[in-house]
Length: 106
Image (cartoon, rainbow, N blue to C red):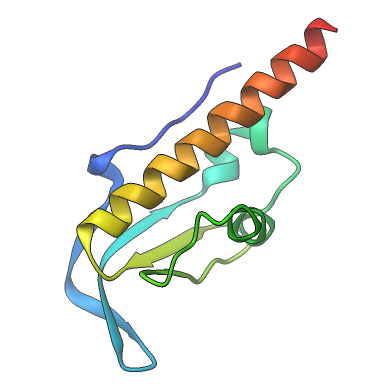
């Protein structure tokens, strides 16, 4: 089972910040996360993954998710918020992979 985990290199500083309801989000993360991790997240589309991460409190007030079925869009008000989100996303992917491995071993 191969995992695609994300790093600071996957966070982009946009020349023109994304603006939503008057709030600027100068940093973004754009990827097809389930597509990058089909063995772990294959049952999710990007909307479902966003819902799941929201349920698990990975999304704070400094994070805006605006996903499409085939692409995961996350926007951030600052770099620390982006890094914290990527850390939580990686933890979710890793934990889910561990649970799948354990289930297969059972």
